[in-house]
Length: 378
Image (cartoon, rainbow, N blue to C red; front, top):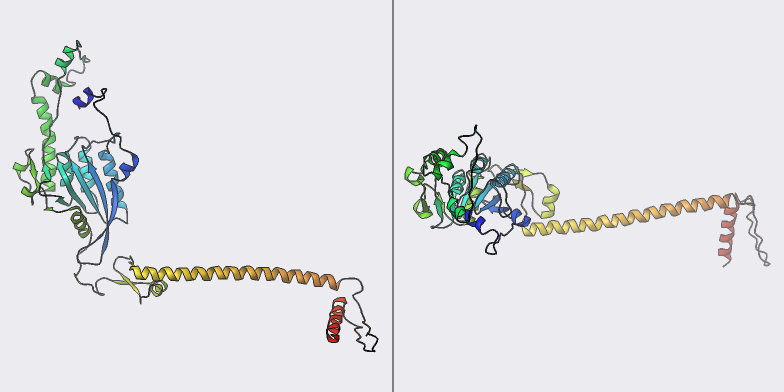
């Protein structure tokens, strides 16, 4: 960090900001087929890249955020397993133990995929996973140990004519005692501090990976091909890591399909008929359609929608007809109550034909009789 700070205000250094969409892309979900079965599992993937720190920064995601992603996947009913896609040289002590506990405490299987490097703090996190898959023979793992860098800047500042004086309260005689001792050439107080952290690191790895040897915990890094069975479980690509995670989330099942292996019929008769099958069966409550079945269901839905549209049109016409009947009834009532509606007579033409409509009940009936008479004459 000293080199970065020294060049911070020069044109020789530039920070690349991590945008929100880049942060969101670190978590994704993959559908994975379990080998030799017809089961599909959903695997959540979280990518951990670069130097690890406890909190988010302008350029990186912190371990607190990674722990939150893991917990969200762990409680998501749609997620069956988790893969950590790791490429990191390590990071700060702060935040590592908490993130390791989140990985170890997940109820769903977590697989660590070493996508280049998982060293120091990154290996601590890998060790908490159910399985560790190295991406290549030369993926780097290990560096199980603790160190710190302390820069004695007194000579640099002296050249600039700057004298720095540290002043402590009388009650704070031990404050920064380790770094003050180191400045005087005594490194033991700081080494004792680091030793406590290193022993904690070793205890965690021994608990998580019992086959790791004492010799492999001295801080050295290793090629994956040389530590299969201890620091890593296997070597394989990313898809194989997904497959391993999916298989860990799946109970053992026969390699051949069988209608007797914990399968239950799903009560979706209409959907089955639309898909062209007798019935649906499922072991976990889910239903999977082939492309042909999906097309058949889509056709049925389209036909049903057309029928619904026709029914809506018929209902509209029926309502309009009802309104017309109401209007006609109102007109008839007006005719019945019109003046002179008691009786009516119609005289025949000069040829002597006569039609008598006297005694008609009302004007409307008389008018109707007259209309029928005219029709008979025509």
